[in-house]
Image (tube, rainbow, N blue to C red; front, side, top):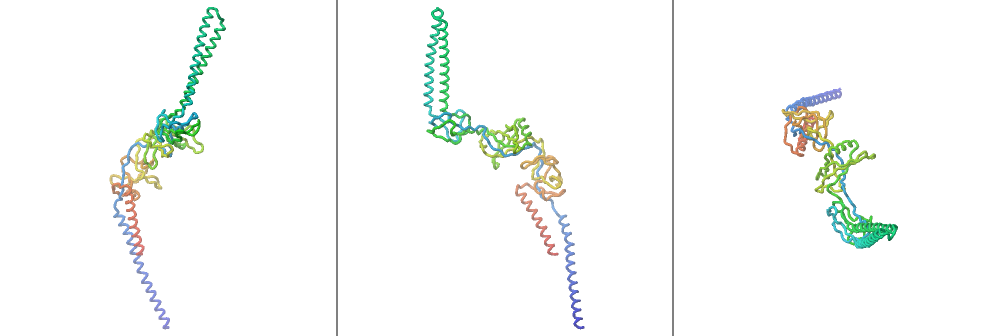
Length: 410
C-alpha cells in the first residue's frame, strides 16, 4: 500500500509540472503572434517614397532599320597581266601605292616590237613608191588611148595595177597599226584608279600572256558593301531603291566608326536555298575606313516614323498582362501605363500610349506599384542602378532578419 501511494503521488507531481510548462510557451507564442501584425502594419504606414530616375518622352522622327551583316567589296578590282611574251625592264610603282587611270605600272623590253614597226613602215614606203609608178603608167596609157596608139584593154590593165597597189598600201598601213599595238603592250598602264596590292614580279622577270598576275589594282573610294535581306523585306528594299537609295549605315566592328551610304543594287532573284536576296550599298569611303573583305554591321532605313513618341528601352516593362511603363504625374505618383512598342532599336523605343513630354521611370521601376509615391533623383549611370539594387537588397535583408528573429522567438 505504501509503495502504491508513493507511485501515485509521483505521477501526480509529473502531470502538474507538464501542465505548468505547456502554459508558458503558449502564452509566449500568442504574444509574438500578436506583435507581428502590429509591426507589419507599422512598416506599411511608415514607408517613404520610392527613389527613381525619370526621363521625358520625346517626339521625333525615327528611321525603321533592317539589320544585317555585310561584306565590303570593291567596285573595281583588276588583275594586271602581260599580253605579250617579254621581259620586264622596269617596275614603276610601289606596293600599296595609289595610282590613277593611265599611270605606267610596268615597262617591258620593246626592242623586238620597235624593229617590227620599222619594217612595216619601210614596207609601206616601198609600196607607196610602186603605187606612184602605177598611177603614172595609167596616166600615160590614157594619153596614148586618146591618140589611138593603144587599145582600151591596155588602159584597163594599168587601172587594175593601180587599184591592186592601193590595196597593198592599205594593208601596209594596217600592219603598221598592228605593230604599234604590239609596241604598246610593252607599256602596262593602270586601267582604273585604285590602290596597288602586292607586286609579284621584278625587273628581269619573263612574263607570258595569261600568266601570273603582276599586281592587283583595287578601287577603295567609292566602295560597296554587299549583304543579304530576308525575302519578306524585298519590297521594302525595292521601295527604298525607287526613292533614291535611302540611307544605309555601315558600323565597323566594336563600334569604332560608322559611315552612311545609299542602296545601289537589288538582285533580280531570291536565293531558293536561303530565302534571301542579295543587295549592295555604295559608300564614299573618303577616309578609307572600309576595306575590301572586311565584315561590317549594316543598317538599312526602309521607312521613317514621323513624329513618333520615343522613350528609353530601359523604361519598358514586359509583364504577364502586357507591356507597360510607369509614368510620374504632377503629384509624384507612379501610374502604370499600358503601351505598344512600334519599333525598338539601340537604347530607344518608339511607342504609343504615352504623350511627348511625360516623365517615364527608367531606374527604380522594379520597386514601384501603381499609385506609389516616388522621389526623383539625378541619373548616375550604371552606379544609379547598382545603388538602387543595393537598397533593394538591404531592404530585403532587413525584412529577412526580422523574420528570422520572429522564428527564433517562436
